[in-house]
Image 1 (cartoon, rainbow, N blue to C red):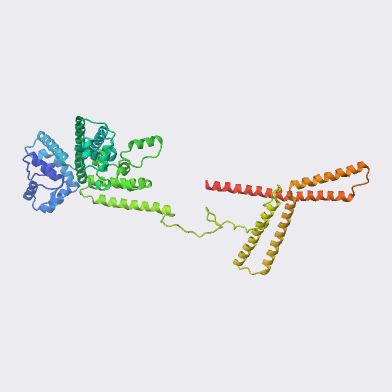
Image 2: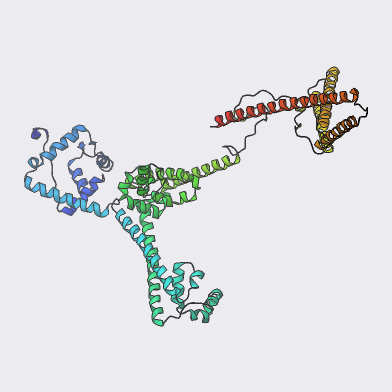
Length: 555
């Protein structure tokens, strides 16, 4: 059937595998090779060409001006040609076609592994691993130098804090006596060398210490070179990722993910906590809060944010970082414009969040305190108005200052009554001021109110006089009782002697009347005191109920 549909018009074979490899690599990229262009010009002038790749067809049409077709029928035809290739080409056996295609595929995969930018990230992984190892080794070597030379010159460790500078100083100085003799040494160093408490060290020991200093300095130089190499590699392979999070953080993310392509398959939420797996699974196991950031925490954007905003900025940065990784891994361009734009957006968002926090501390979300009209009758929590406050009624607190116990000094009580009169006068002045403000001009109302106030004041004065009379000292009462007893004793003594001195009835009657009056006064005093106690108990009960209601509302 295929012979009836398709007929072989021309065929050209490759001379060697290198030519076949170069042609296939160009075809994969959608570019025709020189041999293909010559072949098409010789055999396809003025005819339509069926193409399996639309990108390759566009390139042939632009360069050779040959019409190309690409549709489902063409793809079915190509599939049939691949299956019947040995029958169309004479002299090509099935046994020869399989090893040739296998050898070409192996050489093509080798070429792609060698020059593919997707696989150069292995160099980044190795470089960042070696950089971390160098940091650890440098730290241990520098601490060994400090400890070793500290036996001879312990004061030098406090003067020079940097490890590299310390190693250079030890290498140049050697014995601490050289610091005293040299003119270039700092005065602080000379003073410390003069009064040093370190032990003496032999020349052989100093030679070994200097060799260790040479190792520290050589490692620091190699680390600087390795960092420059890593920075150049990151700028060529992942420029957008480098622009967002920096060289070191980007390289650690790639190393933790395995490769740039594997990292591109991860969502932003995974990129955010990459490196904090132990904390994540511990939080899930103990049902606590999960971590907000992992390796991405060391990025400069998160370092700039306030502690409260680090979680929000890390989430936004992780989302932008995931986009930048995908763009670097799968995109065609090699510039860092996308990363710089996203970084500018994140910096703007950080400024907005910081502005919101400042606004909240200032009093409102927009940064300006909200000023409301003050209303004394408005509740704090609710918007509804309560009943207006009652006016001050002086008659209610007439006996608030009353005490059942007798006062020690009546003069003090009289002094304490004076400010109460002033209070009533102040109340009258306040009421007059309120009447003036309200615009009340009726003279009769004012006169009535003044009469009422005068009557109230007179009643209060009478009650206070009763209180003062009732609160006489106990000593005076005891004296009166003693006098009565003495008079009774005298009367009985006169009767026994036979005298006709009889106590008249007029003397006995006033004593009985006085007792009745005193009883009435004590009862009158006790009644208002009991009423005051009941009123106070009722008021305290009401206050407690109101507090309970407010507490329930707050809860």
